[in-house]
Image (cartoon, rainbow, N blue to C red; front, side, top):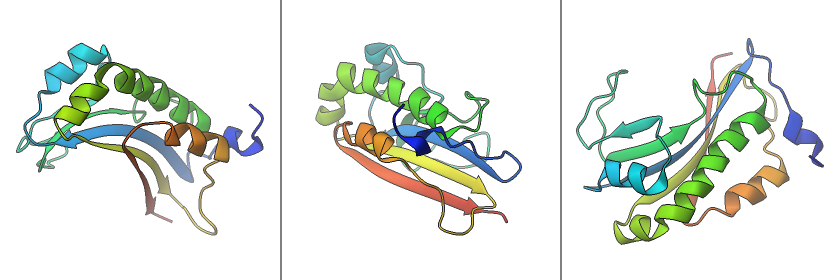
Length: 145
């Protein structure tokens, strides 16, 4: 990789890194997304369903997250994991996403002692994320420092 910052490894005792690709909307078929894409979601909830953490979803939600899937804390590992699946989903089910008015979100999440100028998202990865169709980019920073 030619971008120096793409290999940043955050210390797990200071910052944890996760990424996610989420599809949300009203009354779309979660199984259709899974079957058409061939990608197993790490999150799949119908509107009104309660998660293990007690959150009640306001919309249908189908997504792939690196949380619990990638053991390293290297940003590029998390981005690669999620983007590789997001591109498969988009290639195989974009017509369905558009026909159901599904919202597409890519998230980069930092948790921990996040201080100073904040985490760096290398240009290489921003350009990859920008290749996703109809995507909104969300940065979530939870500072526990």
